[in-house]
Length: 280
Image (cartoon, rainbow, N blue to C red; front, top):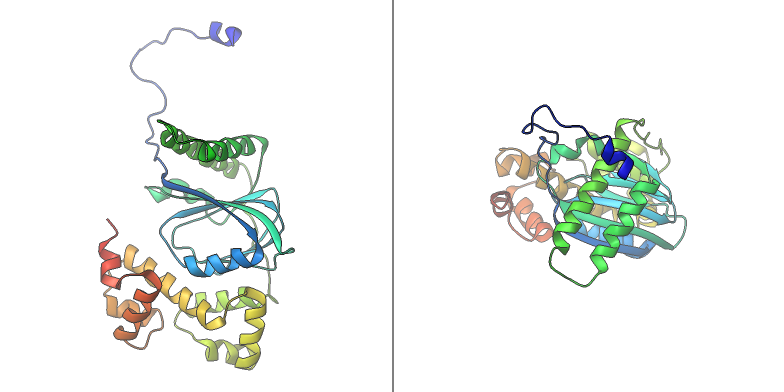
């Protein structure tokens, strides 16, 4: 430390310096864990879509993470960041027991984390140290300054991941052609208004076989999954476009504005217009 201090020289100008780029602060941070396959899959179904970032760190048990129409193999010792309105689910977990941690937060502008979209990161020594300090801070007795410290630590971790992303190739999605969840997600991505009969016909299988196979793989019914995909897409369109609600209903596969409004309120807890108006 002393040797480094001696290397500091007088600046030619005492006013301009470094660090002028505005750094966004993570807001409304939540940390929690999932310890069983059943709980992980059930909560993914219940959570549906939202405007929050979700940082996942895998400490034990590999599996597939499905993000929109892409599928990634997720191993212990890795981390990934799911962005707002990215529909995500999990399948093919190698064990019933697992140790996956989650840190969810809001951040504006969201573009700050655009380089981390659809990427897998190794839990480096530096990232692991920051993560340990984040957990320690979260679990500590609530004191003054704890929230600010937690925000700073999460931001430092995100910056570390951005630096890692700058020097590493992007993760290659799994070509999980035989994975039913992957195939359904890709089909729905290409045909947002499609239903079960459309996918069954396209795949040359019966609807009954398709429903049974999907439930065994994903842990939820195919009908629930498709409804969630539609509500997820509707949430994104309501928050990010000026499309009329009736047009969004048609875009997401609902036969009428009434059926869309009813399904959306059940899934999101408020009407489409109320959800759009709460975006501020």
